[in-house]
Length: 261
Image 1 (cartoon, helix red, strand yellow):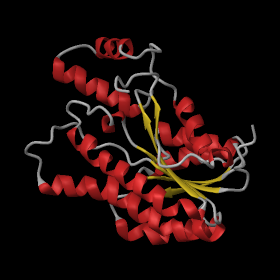
Image 2: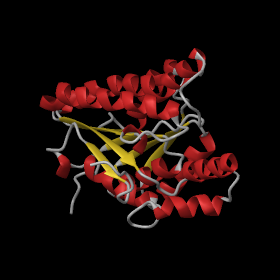
Image 3: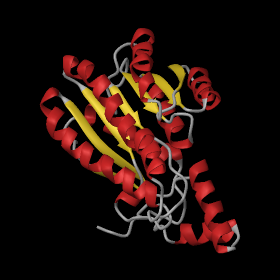
């Protein structure tokens, strides 16, 4: 199936990590030119190198999403080197494990700016080009916690839920411009983030990491963690020409993990 991505320009935030890196590589393999952004410059460059080694076109940017003042400069650099941005895939990383009670206002503000406000602002920056072309794709990666809140991930559950209401509203505002906006959420996909959370849970409950992981995979109907490429394939479809009538939706890539309908 031709996804119609050849020559499109995609910005993938958080592309130095497991999910973002997989998405960047998949989009590049489909012919898109990819801007790879991550707070970790070395991780972003590593993803760019992999894309280039496989014949793709990409550039790497060190991008701290908590610094809203650099958005215009970074987007302008992408526009100069690759062209106007047609596809925006936002992955904002995760805050530290915690509850919601007793957290400082400064902590809430810090992660709101990097996880939520940055996505709003970057989207507003790239929308004029999409509207001018009459085509655009906006995909925001969140967490299964927006559907079934995850214990001890209170900051994540709360802040990522904000993105859901925003994306649904956005879809209604830009649909007639040929732009779609969707939320995609992973269940338990084998990334460094999941390894970190398993290790923290094992430490908190005085159990082995293997025991925690076995319990976790036992709750997934497919009986295993997902592979990042399985997630990136779904995202590639969502940003493609083929998904032109799919907007305002929440797509689960979870192996059946989330128990709710």
